[in-house]
Amino acid sequence: MKKILIQLGLFLLLSFKVSAQEDDRFNFNNLYFFGQGGVVDNYDVFIRGGAFLQLEKDYFQISIASASDGQSEEQKRFHQSHKNCECSVDRRAIDAINFEYGKVLRFFRRQQLSVSSGLSIVTKTDPNEIFNQSKQPWEEERFVKKITVGLPYELKYSLMVNRGIGIGCSYYGNVNAKKSFNGISFGIAIGLF
Image 1: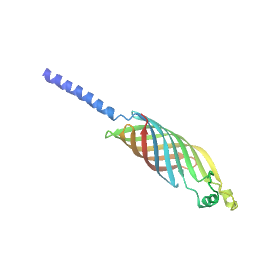
Image 2: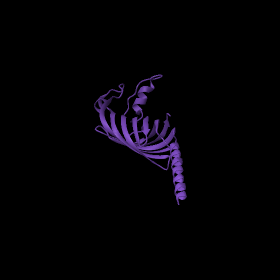
Image 3: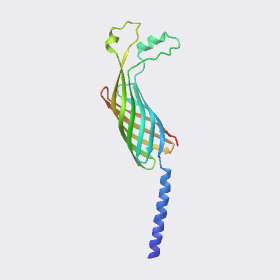
Image 4: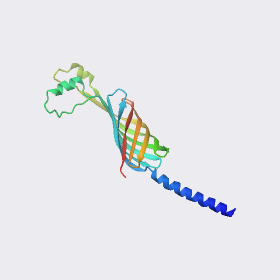
């Protein structure tokens, strides 16, 4: 009986050691840089980018989210007469700089689901309706920028190819006083180490 218990104990000890070594291959603690593109309500283009540090089940993220419309037909006509125009053209947009903290749930070894929230600085750019209604044909459209603080949130699914590369999709939103928005984006994350 002692012999069987000793053999069983050694077998369990070795199996725990082997499983711990396997888990190291699926350890995704790293500093990642990511870029995503997608769709957001009421805007033509939505992009996100930034960096996040993943440590076990926690992660810290600094990112930029930008949703905007392209140039209007009037803006295109106005700048068409300029040769090699390097003009800065304002357009309707909403931009956010986000600082987030989140939790990671790992399943099926390489897949992750994460939820995060934090604080953001939001800049909303809208046409200046009062000026634009009475402007002359040779005058360019004017825009008004407003800045506020927001509450970003994100639900992200990631498939980690290895410790250095992951692909995923995110549901991102921002609640703020000027214009709350949310969108879906897809992208890639590349680990530094």
